[in-house]
Length: 198
Image (cartoon, rainbow, N blue to C red):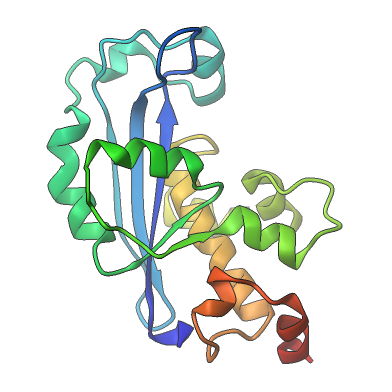
């Protein structure tokens, strides 16, 4: 049952794609939420890389190479990542990037995964955009996100991580899914959602 689950969200910001080079993460955000315990376990860190951050990526998230000078490498963050994500439902908004970067830890076995991008598209197909920031702005969730992680904003890994959990919480509450099986989030049946909402 969804109300019995703890959800752990993850988000990475990246150095930006360059032709012929694999993109790399430069910041991670982690957080948890459950219906009983609320929002908790906020963690963020820059991630060291020798790769320069592209101008386009820096324009989006504002992270510079100077910010990474004393940051740990991704492998050094494994204990924190494992502690937060293990034995929990893992959440991300468009989880492709997060899954790709976690391949640095073979056989980590995190999951199952809930993708709030796919859920937003299923729940509200007529929204003009399903980008995380725009969905949260549409449903007036930004104030709550900012209260949970003050002094941060969009495209900060912790802010986006927290936003995905706030959006998930809103969706679960809106459609009355608390007593439903986790399958309703893993394989959304919106006909059932709307039946529960009535």
